[in-house]
Image 1 (tube, rainbow, N blue to C red):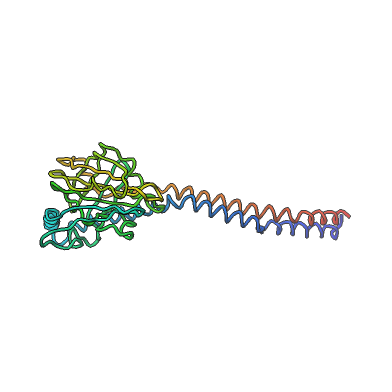
Image 2: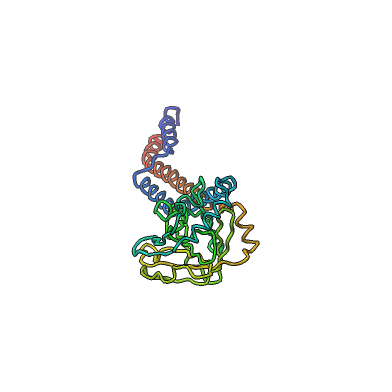
Length: 316
């Protein structure tokens, strides 16, 4: 084989090396896009919930700091809240096919406005912790949709969550949100479980004695009881339908257990490691490898006929 005979083979080798460049076809690109969308969809709920928990923990930390420097002082705000509760004829209404109840109580006499009580720059009045289901949420004034997307809401028209005989405070939260856990697992709470409400440094633990699912018209259990200190947690059920209510009612434990006081005074527990990010990143890496390899192999295969023609020419 002389030098001239080698030229076609050299040109073919050069084309073969060039043929290894990445050139995916349309089907490969579509398949990759579908895989990326699928991986994103599968991890979205976990990612959104993790981000929400991180944000809420930061908000609770801010609340703890703001209480220490609030004006009026924490003691003055708690005293005003106690007076408000004494003047309040508490009541609750439940509306069908909505996510939240409606406060029906009214205050008598000369009392500050609801929004001015237990007020902080953060807008948070309390913190609720439910150890069994991993809930640690800020509690805001009111139960508007915007409020319940940020945390739990105190139902105006019911006792403020500062304790006291003859009080019933209602705290409500969303359930089944894709981007946050909130009260999604409230149906797991059973009599004997406890939850803690911390308001301006006053730590109150409640032991659950009653759980029930009620029709919206059933408000018999949502009224104060003489000499009892009660808190009721409310969320909607079934998920996505919201035709009924889950009511979880607890009575105050006296004295507050030391372990609960320490947990309430401690900063929120750091959110768990974002394993969803590891899984998502691994999935994207595998999808990227599939896209690169698929494009490379398909392009090389497409050039095989040219290579055979070049070898045949070199052999002549």
